[in-house]
Amino acid sequence: MSRQIIIAENAGFCFGVKRAVEMTVDTNNDKKSKVYTLGPLIHNKDVVESLRDQGIYSIDNDYFGDLSSEDTVVIRSHGVSSNILEEIKKTGASIVDATCPYVTSIQRKARKYHSEGYLIVIVGDPKHPEVIGINGWCENTAIITKTGDELENLPDKVCVLSQTTEKQANYEKTLEAVSKLSQDVLAFNTICSATRERQESAYSVSKKADLMVVIGGKNSSNTKKLYEICKENCQNTILIENVYEIPDDLIEDSNLKIIGVTAGASTPDWVISEVINKLKGTSPS
Ligand code: SF4
Picture 1 (spheres, rainbow, N blue to C red):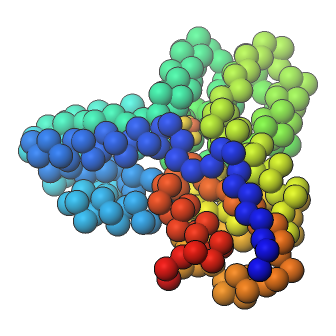
Picture 2: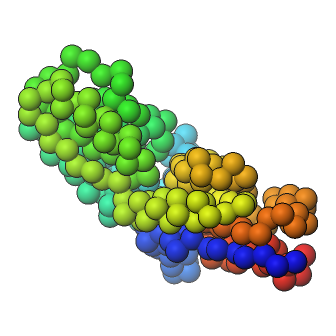
């Protein structure tokens, strides 16, 4: 069957996720302490299982009471609030801070401009750990919005920040809404370039594809956004976590001449390769 597979130019592990995985594995290899991650290290169950096989387990805040100076806690790339860092320090456990430097920069802006009297507005998902963490750096005073539609009665001084994986259009809409309501607006488009590049590549590949395959965790915010972008251009878009989730009928459908593939920032290369091999018909499975 003649079939073209187009892989998005920017797909898979981003700098921050790669760094977090490497820092965690390196810390564990030192064997100086028991290593835990605060929450699943990344939104990819294959990677989380592989870490578990190496003895690295995910914990949540309820576990802090059981930590000791023998332990190390890895902060994942999403980052956490300053209060959580303090709570871990009190247990005596060591901290390996794998917060992505791009997220750290947003946290610092939230702290700085909050202390200068600005109301912080975060464009993003209020339930996402990155947003919860950033809000913690401005004493949980931020207004969190998706598009700014519901905003009213803002103070004069407002600082707009965005979740690193937010859509550009949502950031722009919010900024427009804030600019109508406040005099002194500071705005930082903190959407990560890795996210932007992945979204742009996914957009252009999905324009040409008969079938678009998005690989990534179902809980991954950046993966879900890639899916939404692809779906707008290509009705026939599927979201899978790994090779085993590719429906057989799609593999056999000879009408699908061009298949596009993209992957979220938490998807390792080996998962992407397995999917591509299966789509090409060269997979051993
Ligand atoms: S998407 Fe960007 S901000 Fe998020 S971890 Fe990756 S490099 Fe860092």
